[in-house]
Length: 152
Image 1 (cartoon, rainbow, N blue to C red):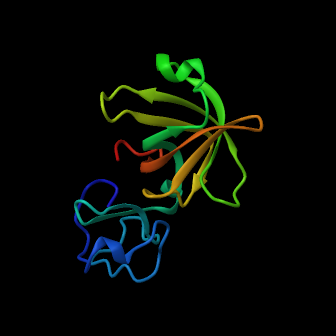
Image 2: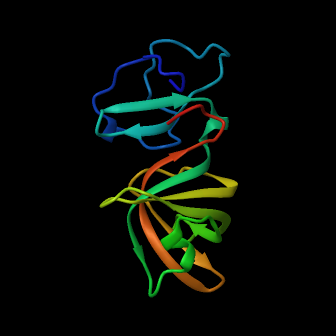
């Protein structure tokens, strides 16, 4: 669960989808008796994190394999935070966000903090950043989390 406790077994993390409620086959009910949902899938560890519906609201996205469209804006080189819009679904509306590059040598990461949470964001999806009508760039989502949670 979201606190790190083991609450069940599964045949493989690839059998689940973020926000899934049914078919979890959990051995123990939640302490509050409310349904649990898939919050996060960790395929490298074959783990599925479950928790309350409220924690499906994603505030922060980390992206890898970042690529920029045209000349990057100055903040990308300096690591400074910049205002932008983030889009995670092909037909979804871009939402206000701030973003910045995290240092990482050969594998820098993009950190995007959403002004308004989104639901159902999962690793493997793509986040695209905009300023006005200009596409700044994109990254593959490596992690998505609710800032209400202590850690990923």
